[in-house]
Image 1: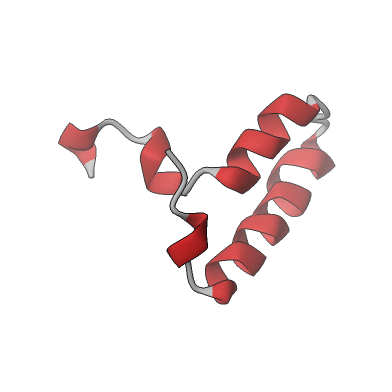
Image 2: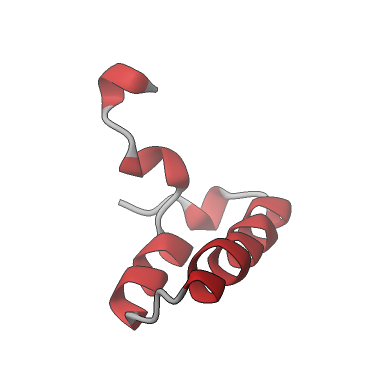
Length: 51
């Protein structure tokens, strides 16, 4: 599920920056992984019990 259409622009920019500085710069190159992280809000990766 993606909530990007309702997401503030600042979150989208922050997510893009995170992908570059925390993932690409550490050698993560799988475009499927990077695309999922860019597309899906971070909280969706966390089990509901921990949100």
